[in-house]
Length: 258
Image (tube, rainbow, N blue to C red; front, side, top):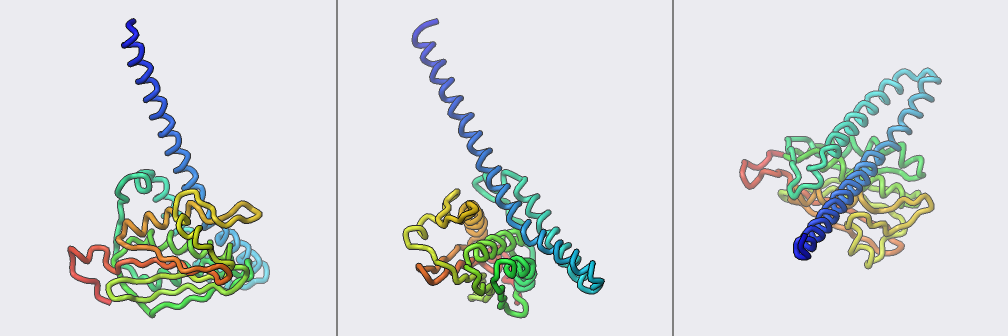
């Protein structure tokens, strides 16, 4: 074998090793994202089950029925989220396959927030929701659900047991979904990188922090033609807002009637 041929083989082997390392890194990143996103809704789910058990033991039938209906909604959202995350191409591909449908976003926001009331109370925070009576749009519900769930759960983690406000308002052809906490706030230097993958800019004793969740939210919101705004300063809490078009197809279809 010539020296030239041997050199080519070594170069090909090195290239193959780099390719395999990149594939393993992509796999590990996906597993980390999936683990984070599937774990996120588990806390309100477990809390809801505990509350229902207590109500059942006290013979509060109406409370149990109402709670089971809420539990069914939470589980339904969880299953949809699992299906999305298990489709690796949805998050890893250059284009995410959105599935816009016509939904009442106001109802969607209220339903999602209700699922976190118990979790907020457990963290000594009051979860307050302000929306219009109804706000119809053509959007992918997964974007609303995953985005709002991540923002609410982060607000509960870092809200210092103070009130948390969830709001929805219409801004012309767009909507603004915001979550405000009254925690320690985020420094300007951290705000510049908070939406990067695997960034944890606020340490906690249990290792939790902002990281993968916000990166996922940013990817989904951007794919739907929207953006995320952050307003925060040290000592004054933080406001995260998703600005999304009411009609994801409005450039090609008639505007959504509200």
